[in-house]
Image (cartoon, rainbow, N blue to C red; front, side, top):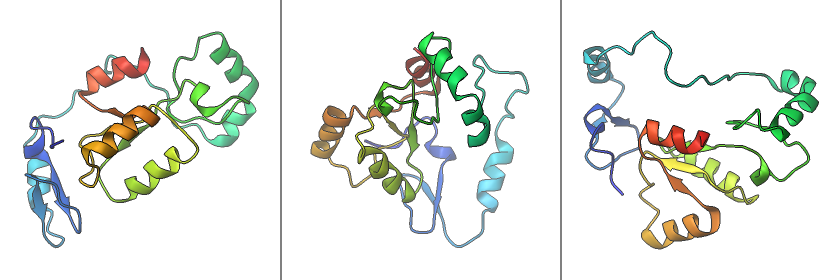
Length: 160
């Protein structure tokens, strides 16, 4: 897999991280990154098409665990992006995990999620360079790894 052509001109790497076709920043001079960010169109202040509620602490979630479980069972909560367990297997939860492959720590995160058998993880924007076709087939077949595509398509799949 290669880097998505539609945004490769806006990607940069630094330190020990390199991606094919992506501009590498040597040292700590990020002036080119800043100039690129300033040249891009600003994001609209208007709300987007989707409303995602995020950022609750563990204590808040646990204090509402019974009600949250009821809402999940009733189908009123369709997807968690982070979740605690409600007495069911993690693959039974309406849980979406996206591992954005931007740095080496992502390998540890991915293996930590695969070790207990978590399935259906989205991976991208590119497949790590050390994953060959055979390894990718195993990850897709055994762990149902999904490669990310576009934000709109991925949100539709995740929320579907």
